[in-house]
Length: 178
Image 1 (cartoon, rainbow, N blue to C red):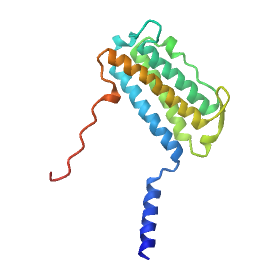
Image 2 (cartoon, rainbow, N blue to C red):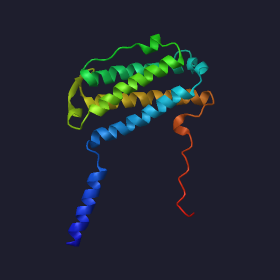
Image 3 (cartoon, rainbow, N blue to C red):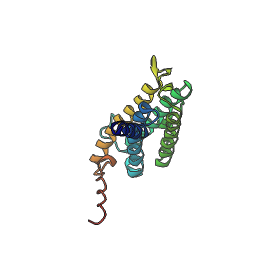
Image 4 (tube, helix red, strand yellow):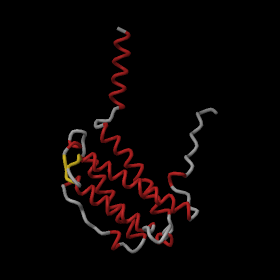
């Protein structure tokens, strides 16, 4: 009887720790990491550095951030209703405030997609350069954002700015009585 009770308690504890939609929850955790780093970067970089380019042939910091917003509107629009949302932020945003607003709006669209997604409907097929699952496309969005965050890390380092992902983690709390 004791073994049964222990197994029952362990199973109940695992069930409580297991999210309702573990595939979507896992993808959303990576997305949240990307989102935090992109938004912190957009805020951290001074507006005067938004025009910085590592070389003349590449996008500026502001253009990269605007491109991330444009891509999210497209990818998450397709996930939402099968059609990309076209904003042309990279061509129309002229200030740091404009780009941050577009980023926040694009993240809100993707956040809504994640809120509506379950493991079951994450396998629904949408069209993006051929048939893909919704979870596949929204995960590609995360990979795309992280790819460009890597560009931004290099740009920040060239400008003596510590990237958000390299900031020191807060020290763990000391146990009571120590």
